[in-house]
Image (cartoon, rainbow, N blue to C red; front, side, top):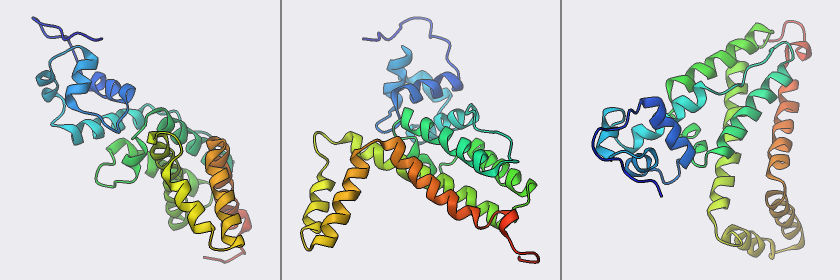
Length: 219
């Protein structure tokens, strides 16, 4: 158990506070919990964060800032896959982080900067800017939504209640039953493979809007 240091306060920084929050996970994070993790009195953290909401934003800022997600956009499909995989792994490593991507007013500056960087990368290889914005937004949203769903299922003790709800709905007729059984099987299985299948379907759709696929003169 971590003991709170008395006497001269330990040297902490905004980055150290953020890293401690990421190590703990953001789902039930508190200022007091991060202070205990760092071995300092919680009052010392208020020089770096204003409260829980600010703590989450600071943690997300550092996580996205330090994320290794960029590659050569010349192969746009690989570029988006590398980006999405980095986000997926980051969110699965830190429970609760995916929710930040679902809350626009919490998105830190590093997230907005990464978003614009990805859009500009796609336009540099010929994508229309409006399409590029929608593409990056869709890939990030799908990845964050998938990770957030996994976070919620991971919190459940035993069989998640949602599967019973799906089964009850599917009992209405064979077609619905088959569909809900397959849905549950996909979610219960390898979550990495489930997410990658969703990503590939999305990328297949994006391929129809890729510069090489647009008819000459199309807007």
